[in-house]
Length: 518
Image 1 (cartoon, rainbow, N blue to C red):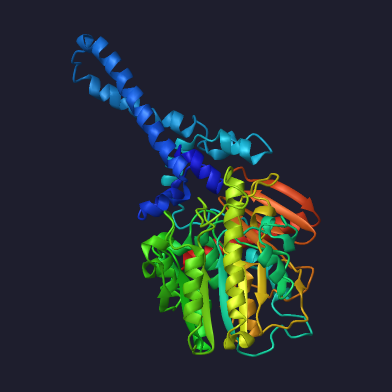
Image 2 (image 1 turned 180 degrees about the vertical axis):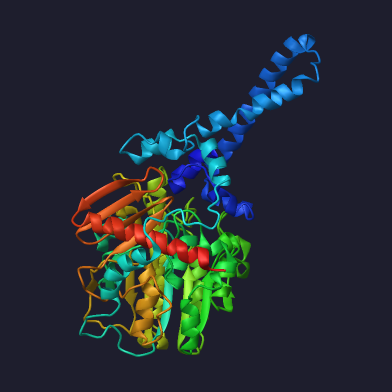
C-alpha cells in the first residue's frame, strides 16, 4: 500500500527515498489524503486479522504433531540458509541480478511494474558506491570538456537591451509549490486554472521555455539558490556537511549589501531545509511556528492566504533597502487541502491539483496587487517561479518527459524593462542565480553548473534529473536516459547523440563534485 501511494506521488517504486522522511513522521504522511490513510489503516487491520485467524487455525490443527528436532539439524539449516545467496543474486552468473533484468518494455510504467518492490527497497538500502561515481562514462577531463564546449558559449548575455532599469533592485523570489506549465494558460497550458498569473504574464517578462531540474522541493531549492543539479539518487540538501560548501545566492546578495529573509508556512525541519537555509547565510527566518494552528491545514502548515498576508504585512512596514526576500508557498502540495471552494472539484487527483493551484493563484494575485501600492515596488524585481515540476495533470508518456518538468518563471515589478515581454530561450533553475548576479554585476563564477538565461544562442539547453535517470533538451532535440536499464527512454529531434554525451557528462560531473564536498 505504501509502494502504491508512493508511486502515485513520486513515480518510483518503494526505495530508501522514504527513509529520509522518517524523522518527521507527521509530514511524511502529509502527501496522503484522509481517504488513503483511513483505507490504509483499515486494510492493514483486515490483513492482520485474517492472518491471525488463519495462523491460529493451522497452528491448533498441527500443534500436537510438533516435536523437537536434533541439535545436528542446526548446522544443516545454516548451510541451507547460506545457499540462499544463489537465488538472491539471481544465479551463478558473474553480474548479480538487478533492476535492469526485469525491464522488458519501451513503456517505463510497465518496467516499473515488473520490479519486486521489496527486493528494490533492500537493494537500495544496501547500495553503496564506496566513494566511486556510479554515473561515470568518460574520464573526468573528457566530461568537463564536453560540458564546457557548450557551456562556455552561454556564459554571457548577448542582448543589446537592458533587462533591469536599476543597478541594485530589491528582489522578491516567490517559489510556488508544484506549479506545472501544464496548468498555466500563458504557457499554452489549461486556460482557466491560473487566471491571475495569465494576466500578470502580460505585464512582465515571461520565460516560456523554463524547466525545473528536479521533481521535489528538496531538489528544487538547491538548484535555485545554489545553481546545483539534483542527483539521480541522493539529495544534497539533506547533508549539512556538504551543503555548507555550496555556493549560495543569499550569501552573494548579503555581500552586495542586501538584507535577506526566508518565509515558509510549514516545518522547516522537513527535508533538512532549516539547515540548508541557515548554511545559505539567511538569519531572518519566518516558519510555521509563527502562525496560529487554527490557520494551518491538517497537513503541511499555514494556508497560503494566511501566509502571504503575513509576508505582505512585514513588507508594508518601512524596509531597509535593498532587500532579498524568499517566500515558499505550500498549500498546492498534495493532498491539496485548501480554503473555500474546489473550483474544479475534488473528485480526482488532477482536479484537486487544479483547484489547489487556482486557490494559490488568487493568493498570488492579491499579493501582487498589494505590492504595486508600495513605495518600494518601483525599485523591485519580483520573480515568480515553481519550486519543481509535477506529474499532474496527467500527460502522455513517458512519465519523465519534459512536460513534467516545464514550469513558469515570470519577472515583474518596477525594476524590469517593460519593453521585454517574453524570453523563449531554453533554461532551467540552475541558471537563475548566475543570471541574477550577472545582472547585478556581481561575482558569479562559483556557480559552475549555471549559464546565462539571456544568451540567445541555439546551443541553450536544459538538463533535469529524476530517480536514476536524466533528460537533456534543446529547442531542436530531446534525450531521456534511464541508468537502470542503461538505455534511452526517448530520443526525438536533432543532435540526440550530442545530448546523450552532454547529459551523461553533466550527471557524471555533478556527482563527482558531490563526492568531493566535505
